[in-house]
Length: 137
Image (cartoon, rainbow, N blue to C red; front, side):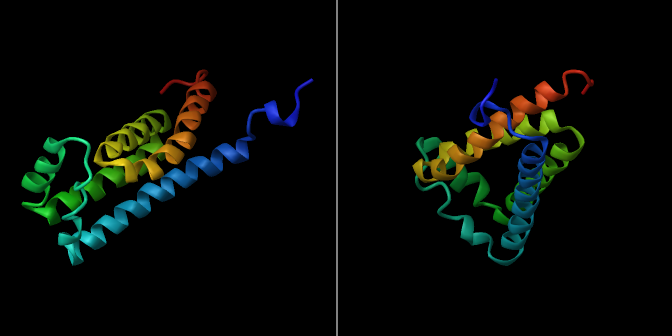
């Protein structure tokens, strides 16, 4: 007999997590479009706490040279992740994990967001792969 604490979350919970990530990345895309078009210089301090100097330097040299363009590209990336989560969930979840792992390179403060996000994304990825074993990608 299994106790409620050892049972897998219901399909409703998995769907809520799934749609939560879709909403998160779609709204993130919208925010980046808004920032790109209104205040592109707001990205200036983003990499100040990066773990490696080359990340900070690359951010300042590459991203901040054309922040509007790069922010719109970032928005397109986040929108693509949202679409992948809808159309190709396994690939979508892998990109969610990769996105958050890359974001963690920008400093300890981002870990406050990324660790909880990964705490949902990793089990959701595992569930998606397990649940779809009977169906092809």
